[in-house]
Picture (cartoon, rainbow, N blue to C red):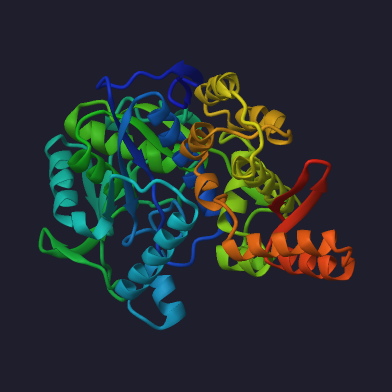
Length: 453
C-alpha cells in the first residue's frame, strides 16, 4: 500500500509503527454552522483510506476532533470567533450552537455510510490537558507573553518550516496572519489567548489568574498526545491546513515532548462548485438537505467524490452529480442481477485489479473504471464480490439491492398473465404501476427481468 506523504513530497510505501494497529488523526469540523458538501469531500476520502487499510489487514485507531471552541474566523490570531458568530446569528448560546451542529454533522456523516472513528473528541473536553501542554512549552522556553496571550516563539523551533517548505526569511509580516507588533517573529502564533476588556467570549477558562481560551492549533496537538500517544502513523487534513494549522501543531507537540508527531501527512485538495469557490455570498453552499430537494441522496454525492482523486482539485456541478447518480444506479442493478437467476461470474481478477489501484495512493477512479467493465454486462456478481464492493466503497450495494417486494412480484406475475390473455392495456397499466415503485421491467426472449429505475 502506497500513500503520498506531504512531509517528503513523494509517494511512499506505507508501513505502520505497529504491524497491525494504525494510529490516524483526522482534522474535524468547527461546529458553528451546517456542514456543506465541500466539507464532506475530505471525510469520504478518509473513509476510503480506512477501508483500504482494512483490506490490507490493518486495524485503525482513528481519532476525529470536534472543534467547539476558540476557532477564529481565519488563520489569524485576531478576529471574530466562529462559535460566537454562530451563536449571535441564531440568538442562542455557544454551547447550544456546538451541540446542534455537532449532531447535524454526525447525522450527515452516518448518512454517507462512513465508518465512525474509534474516538470522537470535543475540544472543550480537553482544556485541562491543553494547559498541561502550555506548561510543557513554557518549561522548554518556547512561549512568551504579550498583552493578548501566550505566543509560540517559532525561532526556537528549528524544524518549523519543514512541512510547508516555508521561506521564513522572506515571509512578509501579515502574509499568513494579521501582524501583531508584540510578536517576536512574523510566524509566531497564539497558544493561549487572554479575554480582553470588552471582548464578548462566552467560552473561557482561568489560567495564571486570568481568563482565556485555547488557540485553535492547541486542541489537535493535545488530543493526539492524549488519545494516540507519541508519533502517530497518519495525520489527515485539507491542503489549506499545511502552512499554518498543521505546521503549528507540529511545533507545539514536537516542541513540548521532543518526539515526531506523524510519519505520514496526507492532505486532500479543494472542490469548487461550477468553477467557483464555495461561498454563501455566491449562493453555492449546498447541504445534503439541499441535495435531497433536488432529488439526490448522500450516497449519490459519495459516488461523485469517489470518482476523483483526493489530491486533485475537483469541480462539482449538478450535471456531474446526476451522472454519478446514474453510475451508482448501474452498480445497484449489477448487484441486483444475483436475485434474478442470472449466471454468476468469477470476478476474482477484477477484484485484484481494483485493489491494485486502491493500494496505489487510493486511486478510487481507476478501481471504479475496472468495475465499470463488468457492471454493464449480463453476468451476475457473487455475494462475496458485492460484499467486497461495499467493504471498499461503502455504497450500500448489499443492503439496497435485495430482492424486490412480494407485492411487486405479484404484479409482475399478474402482468405476465394479462399478456398471455393479450390484455395489453392491463399489462401496460401494471408495468407503469411497477415503474412508479422504482422498478423497471425488461422483456426479453428468456422472459422478464427487472432493474432499479
